[in-house]
Length: 592
Image 1 (cartoon, rainbow, N blue to C red):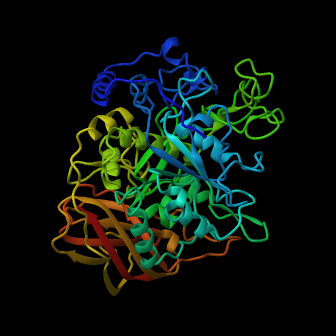
Image 2 (image 1 turned 90 degrees about the horizontal axis):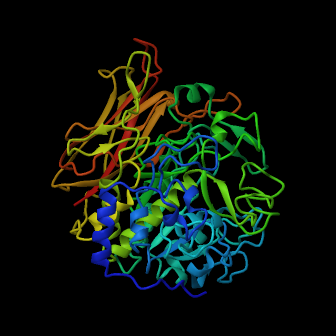
Image 3 (image 1 turned 60 degrees about the vertical axis):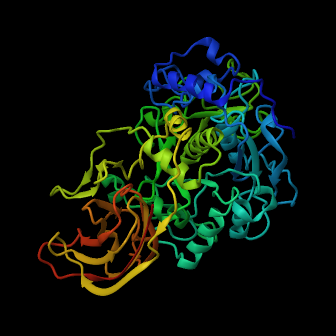
């Protein structure tokens, strides 16, 4: 399909100047601004003035992507291709078709280049995701994408009828396939959760090297922008075995403590240096109930909650009535999220007074919804400056993000010891949170910085450094197990840190793992009392090796000096004998 042709616009420098003026000033929602996309006024994530949305709880004004000024001035992602790596993309959707590439992607069910779902009632997720990132703007239809003039491609490796090996299909969609040669941004609104989520996944250093080398080579050697969902397992650890039997591995104790059931870092791909891992935030700027947390997070987008309305479905939990995300849905009223058989708000069904097509849904949520918002902002950044490397884009998104929920309280033990901090300011002055990463992406600020951004320069990679020694794990700071490694001639400005470790312990769920930088910044890389190390049916399941974790809390600190992994058994009784040991620690520090 041919790209939607935009009307002529002022030169980019002039548009950026205009957009910057709007970014720095206050924007009021006007009927004129939303006229070209009838449902855009309800897309609070684009511009939030506290207006009525789908859902009974009003959004809190100001919690948005700061993207409206860019749209008004023609900065809409033109010339940038976004791959929707998902379960399909309905390329004939009226609000997507004009933005779909002529070679529309890859269908892993029939090997064609048409990624449209053959079972749209089941495989509608990618169409919702695609609309958030790149639904056509200013076309007098429905909604608007964050990058409303970007080009879209679909890669349906998650389709219910997809053929072949899943890992091979991911690699095809990320770098191997001919169809990805012109892709700049890769959106991945999915997670990896094979087997029991209470145990870490194996991931070798060879796996890490192979992935990162291939990803760095895309986009003409500048590296594609790989954006990935953190996961929706803060409040659950549900999984199914190969027989379809379901298990909830997250205990009520974990849920009540609010330490998180399955952290974002449990998915190894969320820890890859090339990946931007995304958390989800509600319309009031606070973490969405489900959004997985951890030191692997880079930034956050908006995921909302459920978007239900009491007049349609009364008597539900209050959280159901918080706004979700409004986006495209597979067409028609018999399939997808918006269908006559499943009415949840006043947009649903063919009798809706808002829109009767059922081509849109106001119930999209999850880190799946937050991720394409970041992908859309990345496309706006690349339109502004296509010469940026993937590291440049990551850095810009982090350093221009909005610090939301600034008073987020730490999760602590009864004695005051911190399990999960709120916000931490490192030695370089960078604020970081295991709940939000560096905060919510801010499109206006990111584009402003991107225009004249000076590249970070050559990557300084310490390589993997390892130390092996058996140290007993105690229950106090004085008795904690510590392994250290000295990094010499490291990066002057850290971008990210990867690590792994091995323990031999009788209750790994009660272990608190903290990485300490040479500057003294403490990053909780795995808190105690999560669902990791829990069991099923009351049977304890302890882990031994954790091959790959990451921490982004040290941005711009100096890497040179002593790095320490500190492990404390916070569930151990006072003065009790040690229940196990820390045996191995490896670390890799990357920066410039």
